[in-house]
Image (cartoon, rainbow, N blue to C red; front, top):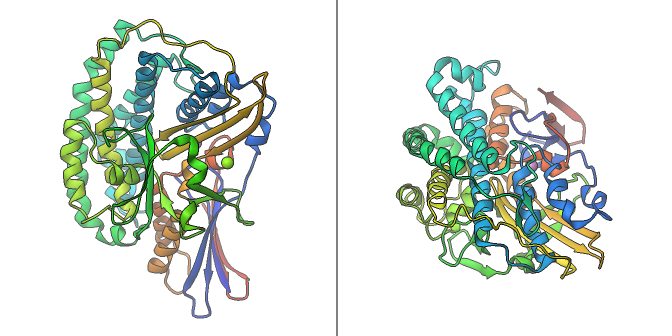
Length: 472
Ligand code: MG
Ligand code: NI
């Protein structure tokens, strides 16, 4: 069997490789996305005091510290057996929404827009954010502005941009100040109109991307995400919902603490990244997707005025759920708009400046599960502790693990469509990487590696020999 390996995948974070297996006729018959590095983080945590977990797990990833901190703190709230103050939950929500904006802005403006606006075959030396800035400085400025807004909200709440230790078991460490609230409120009208402008511009480019829409991880699957009691978009709390490719719930209103009844984790010998699957459907038939596409597919509505107007148009893309992961870009922009509207709404709430922001207690439960929606999808932290509050067991399930099966399938689909004559060429590599970027995976989380690392693509022949190999 022939095989192709692609390395590195640029513009995604982490260390991984792709192998494409060819049959006798040079057609792609299988694709593997493999994560090559592992630091054993779950084992490393054993023996630590539980209250260190939000800050410690935040350090596992330079890309998603806020998401880990929130899921971790929620697991710790359960160990304490407390209901956190209402304002603390609102402040945590604000932090999560700010993280969503800065992360989605990074994904769309910095990592994806060069492909969309310059073209997949644009020379790679300038097919990047700087190349884009040279031809459309306003677009680049808007992307920088949006990301900066999200980062500033995080700073105004938590005091530090990277690895804030403001979220704590039982709530948060300090209340919001009136001047910080006013400063954020003053910026929101501009931010909201900026996002709307880019949403409208993006929609006008969809016609040019029909081929990508057709083959960028476009297939039926289940979708997983959180929803709340109203059935609206939810990123911080709520219950788990799985829908099928027709949009019908296959599991709804699931207690996050019972995630193991619905989610299985499969281990493959060729990668360190586990593949999760919907347990009742088995492996690998239980493939599902998480993240912006899944969340918009499974929520009844966004719950904010402007985002819901755009969601109505998004829904018109397909008769049921949008099945092409290319549309995750579109979903990401709608969620960004939702997040800005929701931040404005939360900041206007009369109790948002309340001073009592943390419930204090000792260990009252020996097990806790915290679930939140990270920008790239559902994040699960599950801890068991002893009577002294020392960690005995940890399970983390990250968004990239939930999406692992669908990413592999998406890579296979794109490779089958774009590979000619069993040769690796730059345009093919970029398209395969672009499929991966639609999922916005965090390979730093997947490997618990610090910082960005490269990826390889290898082409493997029917006899197992290496035909070609590319590293950026
Ligand atoms: Mg795990
Ligand atoms: Ni991460």
